[in-house]
Image 1 (cartoon, rainbow, N blue to C red):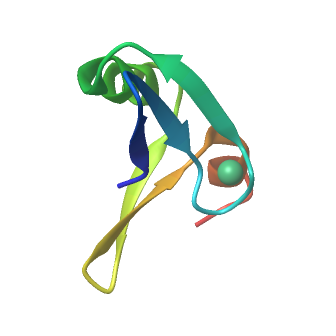
Image 2: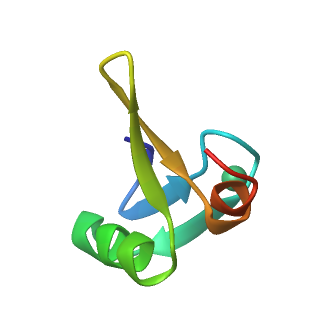
Length: 60
Ligand SMILES: [Zn+2]
């Protein structure tokens, strides 16, 4: 899971490239953004990774 807290903001970071969206007011807002914008969560060896739409398009 790559939603990180910075001070009182949250930042969503792709684990496969340097794509990053910050400025979320809370964790749920970042989760909703992911769902609405084609981000995918992927479990690899028991760890969760976040994939941005650009990386999703490139294939699994
Ligand atoms: Zn990416």
